[in-house]
Image (cartoon, rainbow, N blue to C red; front, side):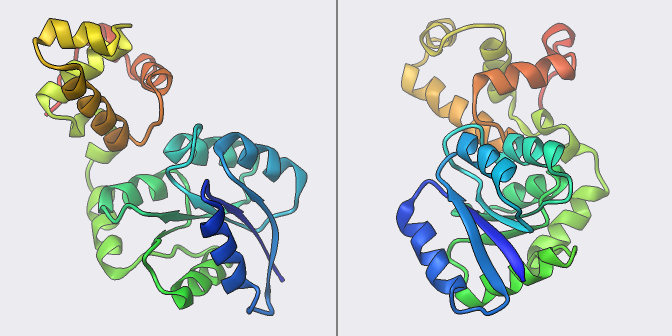
Length: 216
């Protein structure tokens, strides 16, 4: 029996997943969570083989949550279920330790197949993502997400980790707060993080606050 837990901030999504999995005799849903904190708590409370995880829940989420989960539960198989179809999200998730990545638009049969595959220790990706992942494994770019930022995004990144607020950055760059907020959202997405605090930790770990390295 494959013991599965579901983590998604939308009840209707979790209900739909449970309905699909209820038809499979070898799969049992053991629990569900609606945000990152509840997901971490759930993994401490139940025995779970596969966690079907939405990458965009309330924090902690994304790559940060994957690392937290595997840090305390290294044997857990994580299958990312996401509304994002971009290859970069999948690549970053797999590099963080997830065993599979599936778009929410995928067919029910793919979900079941993905769960069975990752529960056996294999990776589940479609052919296109497999190729993308292979290419990224041959380069250093994805291992340092800040290198994917544009020069303007990297500038905003350094200001954010330096303690500036959105309004202060807007004044300094002579742009609107909305523009800065858009940059901030894009930075978090590209780097697979969900808060400025996570960006600060990343910057400190990579000596970016002191070094002033520039993005591409």
